[in-house]
Amino acid sequence: MPSQKVLEQKQQVVNDLAERIQGSVAGVIVSYDGITVEEDTKLRRELREAGVKYTVVKNTLIKRAADKAGLSGIDDVLNGTSAIATSEEDYVAAARILQKFADGHKTFSIKSGYLDNEVISLEKIESLAKLPSREVLLANVLGAFQAPIASFARAVQAIVDKSGEAPAAEEAPAEAAEA
Image (cartoon, rainbow, N blue to C red; front, side, top):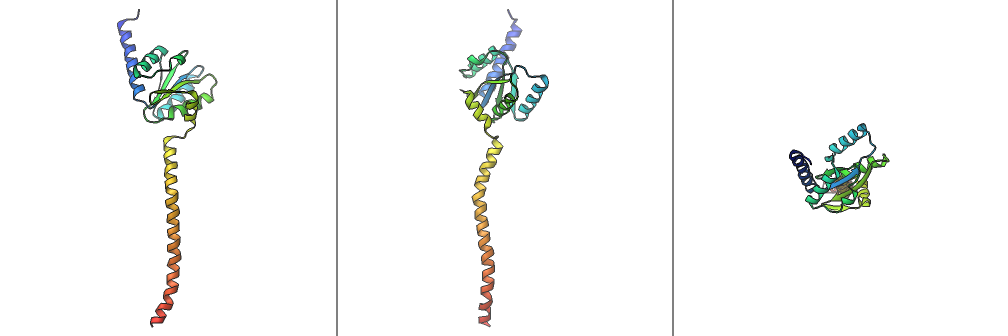
């Protein structure tokens, strides 16, 4: 029987993880079998730079935290080794980074994931992983807005350039007529 102190520590881990799940917009659960310490360190650094929290947690604690957070439907994937990656702001960062890592490592795999507190399929996670980052999407939208404006500005400038030359040529005869 575990001591009271150990039970309190586990309860605190469950509470913290449940808050993290509730406060995140997206999360991914992975099996991290067969990766080296060097690979794990590199993966954690990349996730941290993207604002993603990545933690290795016992399956029973993930299950209890998910239940407490109101996230149901992930119990069947909670076996073997498990780690959870959560993102508070970016919907695609965790999926993109972990899918890219899984593609390069045969034993590392994505088990499940969620968006806005709803479990999603592996196909949706793969689709998310293929999306560009938020910054790239915003740049594309901005470019789409700027293109018509830039075309309009070029057209106006062409009219100004053309009309700038024409009135000068037309004014000369008018001045000659006045004199």
